[in-house]
Structures are given as C-alpha cells and as structure tokens.
Image 1: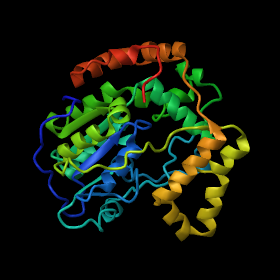
Image 2: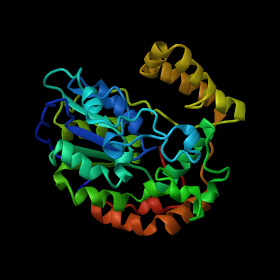
Image 3: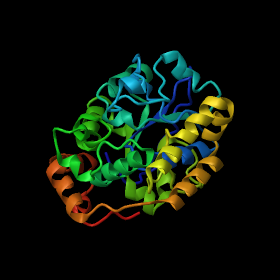
Image 4: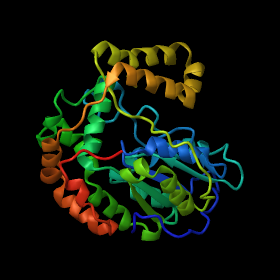
Length: 327
C-alpha cells in the first residue's frame, strides 16, 4: 500500500442509493479539514455538508449530553447515528458525482471497518492522512486548550498511562496508526486504501490533491484552494477561550438565538476564515519540545511506527527525529 502518488485509477463509481463512494477516515489534526474543503471544491465531487458525521463509528448510539460526560469521551455534536439520516446527507448530490465524507474517528474506532463494509461494501475507497503522532497529539491538546476543555494543563501528562490521555480514544490511542490501518487491511483490498502523510499535504498540496483526485477517478488537473484550516492556536486568556472556542459562549449564544444564521455561518468558508484569523491574532502557537517529542515517539509509538513503516512501504525514519516537523 504505497503512500506515494500513483498512476491513474479507474473512475470511482458514482453514488447510488444515497451512499458515498469514498471516505476520508483520518487522522484528526492531520489536514483533514483542508482536504475536505479541497474535495468539496472539485466540480465532480460532492461532500457531505456535515463534516464528521461519524456514522460508521457511532451507529445506533444514544450520545450522552455534556453533563453526563465530564471527560468528554463521547462529545460529537454533529454525529449522525441512524442509516436514514446518514443517507439523507447525500440527497442533494448531483447525478454522476463522486460522493464522500470525512470522519477522522473512523481510523481508530474498532467498529468502523465492519460497519463500512456492511453498508458500503468493500469496494468503497478509503483515504487516510497521517501526521507524526507526537505532533498530532500536541496539536490535538492545543486545540482542546483553545476550546477550554484540555485533558490536563500539561502536555507531558500524556506519558502517564493511567490518565485520561490514554482513556480518550482521540488522544494517545488515535496515534497507533499501524494497528488501526491493519484492521482496514484485514477487511478491504489494499487497492482501495490510499495513505498520505501530513507533510505531503503541507509541502506539496497541489501535487497531493492531484494524486487524491486521481485515486478517486476525477479530473486531477483541478487546482483547489489548499489554504490550511483548523490550525490550533492557544488563546492567551481563559475568557477568550470560552468566548471563541469551538463550543464557547459566543457560538452557543448564536446557535440558541439564531439557529438558521448559525447554520449558515458554520458552512461559510469566509466566516470560518475570519474566525481563524481572529483566533490567530489573539492567540499564540507553542512548539513541542524536541525532548518530549522524542520521548513520546519512542516510548509510546515506536513499535507501532515500525509496523506502519512496513505497511506503507515508506520510510518513516524522519518521524523519529527530535526536530519539529516541516509544514
């Protein structure tokens, strides 16, 4: 399963019966928001208007409200948990388009591969973007700090195997990419799975998207806007985090008072770019220390990364470097 750009793939089947023909399965904090937007721009592609419906991971679940979930183990406000509601996401797809959605939790959820195969068959195309796992985890922590819901105040707590960092699947467990991909390789043909690295997207965005378009069977010459999205900046004051975080006071007030306006703003790239700009200017982005990056990479993820190296047939030696990532 090569992660390098490959030769042209045959066209992906167009959506039938309101089902997607491809899924972006993860990983979180690895460029999936930028990828979702770049895919949505392509005239031959229809993306679910709900990013991260998470259906194949949360199928049939009765999600707990925040008050009953203090560790935020199941906080997925946009999740779609019934097959009928999931199919409805693709009702507006034009005839003949290739349809898809992006839910990063599919990568690490153990139920997702079987649920995907059951509902979509094993010829669905699967796409993963993977980021150096210590860097991904650090980015996730900064994102949660900015929202006002960090798992702990210190990132080094991720080394404590008895902590929430190891219980919450979107924290330390999400980074065991080799084990997660192995579940998909045990269930789907290798030819149906395409894996990219975060640095592919960061350093060569147009080339990477062309390779992805080619894999999906759509015109690879289309050039999307690949401006990075969803970058995690830590707001400097708790009040700012409460106000401007993803689930902060300003957003909650808008959603309650003007739900239709709020829905349009959520889907507006211009509004999201404006909010990201405000957060960047009011916040600051920290860097992961080389020593902590090395410890987490070697002590937590080392064995799994060697397995991943074999699965991808691509050297990941640069991920073991103590230096910060490029891009």
